[in-house]
Length: 131
Image 1 (cartoon, rainbow, N blue to C red):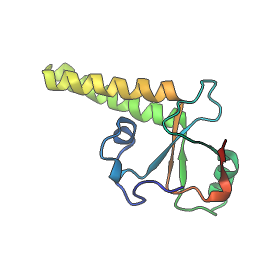
Image 2: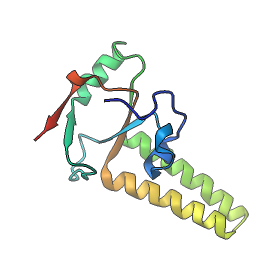
Image 3: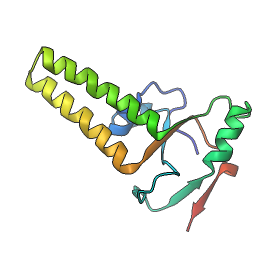
Image 4: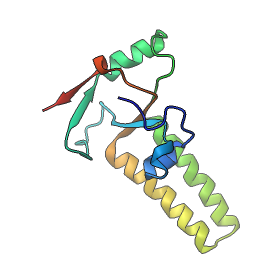
């Protein structure tokens, strides 16, 4: 499983929003600790052994792969909300209000989905397709 663009420069926020999909270095997953029912965005579900994947990342076996936890995704998106809020407070234009609303929607969507991201690729022996 490979991200759309391993060398992509797309941000976490643009990935969550679905913008510039050809430039994202991320693969979307659901946090395995999430008690939420995962949202199905396609016809198949894939189960990733994230524990073993993280162990092998830590051991240096997958140097170009990293897991962005659900908490880190939320922190990144909250930072974008904070930046947009400051911008709006300093200059309350319609454009800045829309930017703030979009940033809040990004965090809401990522939270709803229990989203975490994998940057890079996931070799096939770390996942299985669920029937």
